[in-house]
Length: 400
Image 1 (cartoon, rainbow, N blue to C red):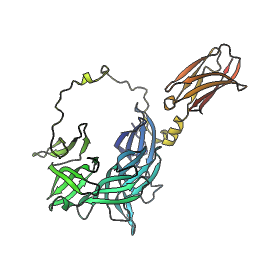
Image 2 (cartoon, rainbow, N blue to C red; image 1 turned 60 degrees about the horizontal axis):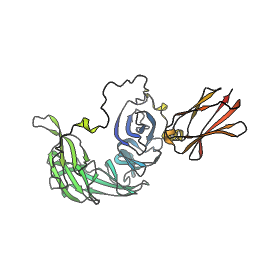
Image 3 (tube, rainbow, N blue to C red; image 1 turned 90 degrees about the vertical axis):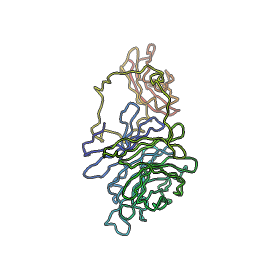
Image 4 (cartoon, one colour; image 1 turned 90 degrees about the horizontal axis):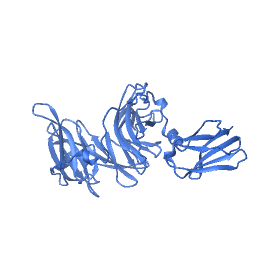
């Protein structure tokens, strides 16, 4: 749990697990100053906070106002955030307008660039999600605000260097003459050349829900219109290459209810998995239950205690060594940290004359080793641990 004192409130927007098995959470913290509001927080598999870093700071970008992030995507070991901000119009810097916002982040979670999309054009709106088109080009999806309560679904193209390439939109008249607005907020690959998104449509004063299938030029290939909706949605591609979608509907008595359905390639309803499973039988280990004792666990109460990504990755590049007892007489214990982040490790001990007196292999994840000192001369000894041939940790002790 993170509850920094300098922020009034906050929430999480997205989460992913990267190739290092770190849990990366996209977080928004609100404050009166709003110098920095959007953060990534890194957790390990045990839920411990590893680092925290902020993006789109007013200090670095004085023109930006109220940036908000919705979505986090990993692509080729780098990261991209989608959201919105307010940015001044070039011909009138006293007035701010709603812009789609993208943020590029490198593999060490340093900010590469921010992109208020089409600041030189009249693209006012939001970016809700991004997906790679290829290694260098990314598609962002969202909505473009037009006059009145009139919106078009928007496809925005930018590259991994933060440069705008272009945009396409799905106009309302491509769906029907009585459509007031259409919006897409999520995107998945449908096949090699097509994409699918849940959609929101305004038709003669009512809001409906459905799906679009379209190509990269925003040309509709197929679409559906479902029931009247009353909330946001989520969808996922299933193991059998269909799609499960959840949203909220209004019942006839004005109550709201959860609505979930599954569709196939033709946007037709398909049945959910009708097989019966005994879930206990699927586990290789006996299922454990009980109470988890959290006493003694650390709770972070301020971001000043959490390292930045640079500090964290600089730290795990080392192998700190704790030597005890020191001085020692018959046996010495060497305790290691961070060995789970290293490979091909070797421990060596040298006397004061630089002569090697001991060597052994250190295994990945090994936490300590004990060395018998019988037969060692009294005096000062140096300990070196190398990882891939480079010194990662050192220590010293005295044999009395």
